[in-house]
View 1: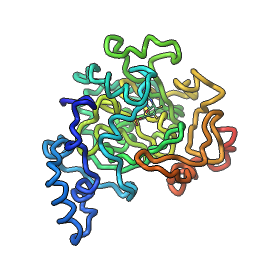
View 2: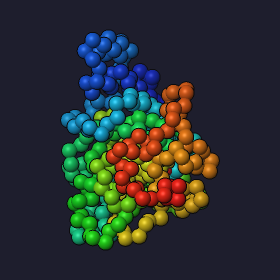
View 3: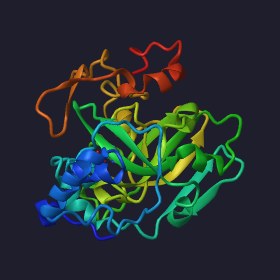
View 4: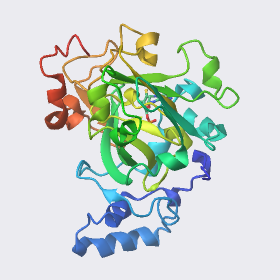
Length: 316
Ligand code: MTE
């Protein structure tokens, strides 16, 4: 897929939220004509779906009804330290150099049937869905992102986890020629993340392979990344090459880099502040006023039972 750099994206190609909503059938008939007419008058758009790779996406009951951020916000305001620590626009400027094809994902460890799957086969594991999720970063900003993906549990079941598997570790790509950030000492690469098995198997946890109906841009973690909507964004490892089942809690990139700042669980929790950033409120990218951060990022009904009996101040 041709990924445009931000400088090449003409304002006329930025996905209009109104038209996106119209495509998803959210717009009531009365307003639809005017909105679509306005979008077409602005010369919009071709990128997100006219040649979209994912045509027949199932809609998910787990989607939030909030309006998604624009494609431009989602693809130019990123964290991806393999491409440097130089600001939110750096991944979009640099990640185009990463090779994403051919791509395989190894699934191994405490499993009955370890497998290595080509990305083409990963895409066939389960019907692809559109999942509109909030993403809340520990730094205090948030977005709403229309992911394309499928439940991670469908992929994990392929290898038949053994009874003593308790955790799942995610290991991400290292391509030194394309990733200048790998030379920086701050993180012990490869970037890794980890989940408890029940978190990984939860139906809200997805493998994302696209957004806005199109394949994932490199800066967002092409060709596949984890998305765990009730946890801070950093739990969502990008460009995954290996998934390993273990019986011990895996070390993760941020725990290793700054153990006093990042816990293993990283559940969105307005009551537990990060040493540098309060977690009480968040600024939705594109908005001026802050909004209150919700426990578990608004997904408490579905996921709070996973942590029953745990002291979430200790297990942050
Ligand atoms: N995955 C890898 N491989 N490398 C990273 O630096 N950053 C994490 C996470 N996944 C990161 C990663 C952080 S800190 C966040 S907030 C999210 O990706 C950001 O995802 P986005 O850029 O698609 O919004």
